[in-house]
Length: 353
Image (cartoon, rainbow, N blue to C red):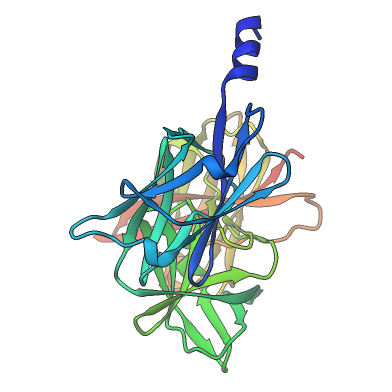
């Protein structure tokens, strides 16, 4: 690190947004300032849509500032999809940097909004499909057989889950179990895109309520992984990278042989089995795997598709002799008797720990 850089880091003033809290009638923004000899809060002001507005300002600690803005001051002008918020100190506009930890989602006038810091601060309207209520519903999730189940803290009748990541959204239908428990088939979660959802809402008719989990959770399931903290919902699919996939009929005409080349999977120590499962998470069949350097091969009989007409999926099978077992999937398509069969193969593997 050069002397000039160190000097610049000492002299240049910084003003960072570190958190945004959504309350019923106001929002609380916390800032962190640096390289101010004395920060006089009386010289600080906030302008919304270029107009100075009254705000409550309180110092927090040695270099933090909390600013409370009444939601009545945050209104979207006609045909505008954002509200601009600027900070000024001693008459000069501050360059606000994004150093936030946690959620940047707000509800303003029934709209779901997201805060963005790019020199200026913007509050952008994201979704008007529902009326977003600034009321949190506490959740406690758990896995029950083949379902993702959770308990709620109130008696609203929810019909779906809404997952939000900026402008991206996903909806999942819910099934009620009693007055306050709901369940989701695991295959519905499996279909979600592999991304981190920043916020989760529960939908009751036309209203959406913010979901807040009571703790951090992680579920290592089948061929994907679910991670939950109090606000975020992350679905991670475990994928085996393969190429040169070849299907050919066995010499005895009673099945087919699958050959594939593993590519870029150095973290995999040993391939164990190909496992076929149904949507009820029941094992239909399992077949041994042989490996020749990077090549993986296994034999699967045709009878398994005749005797089991249910859709085939895969599941993680716990192996007593394997310290860490994970599941990777490969999607294949084959042609037999003019019928296309879609086969989802599961390779249970041993991961180097």
